[in-house]
Length: 407
Ligand SMILES: Cc1ncc(COP(=O)(O)O)c(C=O)c1O
Image 1 (cartoon, rainbow, N blue to C red):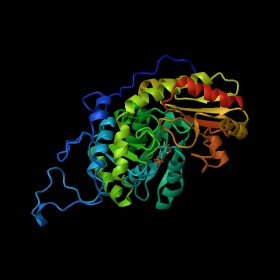
Image 2: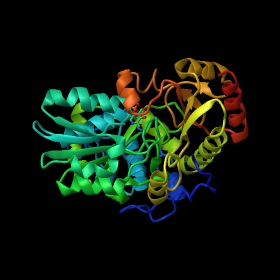
Image 3: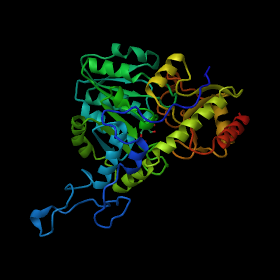
Image 4: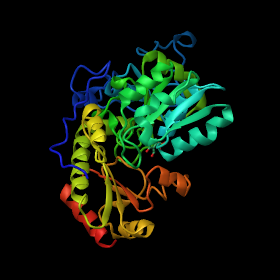
């Protein structure tokens, strides 16, 4: 049973190692600013260019005043600025932005491993992360050890001297289980492995994994960071040497974020703090409202499953986010009826936008898994994953109750 709680916790993140000295909302608004010396525009311009003039030696022109750039796949002022904002948010020394979350993840993974290495990963990860690790890495001679969700607190039993990388998501997609970042960091570091956390669901407003011992933190910035369902982007943050270690493969794999995408991400980030406060409130309101609904068999919400989960949330999260998954009566058929009954909430995959979205993990994010694999991970056929936007909570609840009426 989910216990009712008071207001969501404060949304200011626990300061990371290199957190901005001002408040998070100030950093979000002003962090990407650089004085535009040409036109003096308040909003930094988009450097919509693939290439840059060579500095000084071939021309009479004065060399650029700032950093010298060569080619946008390697670096561009617009992407560099937004990466700086992400680094500050996560309390990291450095960050890079990518063309998608999977671009960020693959750069991190392939930079960290070589043939013969082993990876330890939670077995409840985003579907494409799971298939990249499970189906692709073994082709390069990398061995996987999977940690079942219920064995999360015993992760140190899964690492070996060959473990080079430990991968975790918390809260998980779509079951919204939380995992103790400190315990996982300790297990990784006991064998000298890197600890990589996918922080997409929590966002740095609610959780800063680097401050709990992670070495690298990644995002599908397509989701909350950009926040408006209109840009594909990814981000990776960590210490300067760590990020220097991913530079080569980031450049050669080529999933660089384009300048226009970087501009949209920078614009979205300015309201991340405000949006997350509303997402947190709406997530809690809906989770509490649906918990006792007769058509709902189970509500998945961070901390709801057990006292241990609640304790982990209280320790490492400042807010629980805007994701709620519900298992409705009637299996897949019931879930289809629910989806047809929605009016305000869009039926669409993805999450983290200002508009509420509902999707069936069985048919979207986790369709690549066999029914047995889904069952083992607690992904029921009747599960509907709901990403609560920033609409008025009363309207959302009315719409969801109406949809449940058709189940
Ligand atoms: C938790 C999580 N990680 C990574 C990804 C991949 O991100 P992208 O779609 O931006 O490549 C997703 C996408 O849904 C996700 O939900």
